[in-house]
Amino acid sequence: MSASCPTVIKNTLYIFAGRASNAFFLFLLTLVVSRQLGPALFGVFSFLTAVVVATSGFSNLGLDIWMVREVTKSPSKGKQYLSNILGLKIGTSLITAILVFLVFQATDLPQSTLNLLWVMLISIFFNSVSQTLWHYGNCFKQFIYHSSLWAASNIIKAGLGIVLVLIFHELEPLVWGIVASEAIALVLSFYVVHPRFGPFAPEFHFLVWKNFIARSAPIALGMIFSILYFRVDIIMLQLMTEEKAVGFYSAAYKLFEVAVVLPQSFMLVLFPTLVEEYHSDRSQFKNRFKKALAIYSLIGGGIALVLWGLSREIITLIYGDQFFPSIAVLNILSWAIFLFFINFLLSNILITSGRERINTWNLVGATVLNIVLNLIWIPSYGTIGAAWATLLCEAVIIAALSLQIQKSFE
Image (cartoon, rainbow, N blue to C red; front, side, top):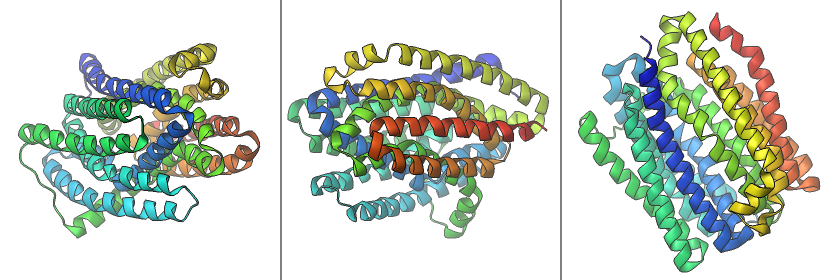
């Protein structure tokens, strides 16, 4: 049974409100950090954030999206999925944080950066568990919980972070504030979700975990390589160039992240409906995809044109003249935004139709290509090379998906 148009619109507004507030408050934090601490420390902060976001893919293992798909098909098993995934994530987040820190310990990063990285990695545990609680409402199309809790989490994070930066004008208090805010958000999420959906607690059944990991593995690999694909350029810039270059690139890339809030928000609402229609009404599934494709193309193209045409004004207004090198980066990344809109829709269609393995291999190939291009172009062209690598990889992904997507409608 497909959702009515008013319901889809209402739920999309819920999710978009949460995502928009998330983007706004984190962007406000970015604005304060970049202006108060300068390009170099902003570059370090961007590197720490990129590592944590990339690491979260390994701790989440695609379990949240997989849970939504499975509980949508079998609502009576919701508590079983939720409890075991919570227990599983407690283990994976702690193990992942330790392993990632050990990897970067072997690099020549400054000790001060490594110390901050270790603190920042603590936040993965709190955020990973919170994400599962937020997604659980999506299983029953109760998107208001995901939206409101996500918004509250980032309001706390941005608010506390801004206050600490303005008071201390240093990076370390900000990092500790982010960890504290993630812990507060987890407590808040538990006390909101628990009364609405009934009692639950983490369960530690290793045989169940093994089954869950095996079944969610294709989605997990896809998410991991997707995150790596979008964060590897910042990490490689940190390792191969100076901290200011990371700051310049991150300033433009942050606008990229803000722009993709809308397609992700719409997909969170649309995904359960697409799953239902794919299994019950393939014709309706195809029609809904065509409408979504038109909307994604129109909005993505419009945003790309605005950012490209007004790149100079946008960068100088938001970050100031000291971030002038970010303008050229934004001119390139603005067109990557348009391609991302289309790619995001097509990749989720593959997941909806149970062809997530193909989507995973696409992302693996794109990530490898991105790394290779960065290795070739960053030494010669710096941030511009990293931006062109992103744009080219987006074009390659859209070509691959366009060839593969037709089978989802047969």
